[in-house]
Length: 301
Image (cartoon, rainbow, N blue to C red):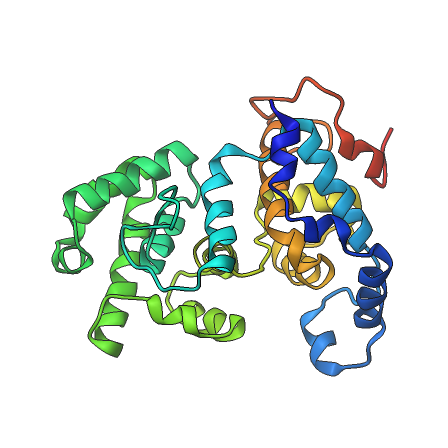
């Protein structure tokens, strides 16, 4: 599994930053009387996770299985974006020729197609969509049924097709262009406001676009991340995805968000030990090694 090379991909900045400094900064935010922070932090008195915990969990998951291959291309994009701030659009290749970077609009649509389906099916749906309709202008001009047929392998085709067509229609009406590259020049809060204005786009989709396609520091919360965060005691019992998202984005250091999110998401899909079950369904896979997160669970056996 070549653990050592994978660990080397982590910036030295992550491992050399003083834990005490991070902890002090975090504690200040928790104790603040700032009304604006309290309005966006649902659990201001809940002290977990600490920066130290986040770093330890990140490192232990890296040690367990290395960094997930499915997210390596996004990790490279993030690393390159820090070295090269040039704006690149559809089909652009980074300076090393390693990543075929999606446009922001491509990224948003691919995220929509990934909802409530498997990674394989969402990738097939996106590839089918681009094969049938090479441009977004053709998608907007197409009949609803033809668009649904192009993405049906991803499931929920009528709902997703309507959402995609609405986004394209809104962009055409607002600016006359089917493009979201202007988001790269906005602040995180402005991006959230802009994307949330489209019907059918919720907080998780916005966070995924921010983290994967705009190389911003954000922490999407899906079912897997919510389950593990609850089991670890990082949020109070009964916390929903929205409140967990707000809380974890305040508590987790920015430099750890991307790696930790990808690792928790992947681990949550395969481990039966450290996350709560959904109903009576067992996960199809389970790691065959001792789960390191059990040492951090609030109710570990």
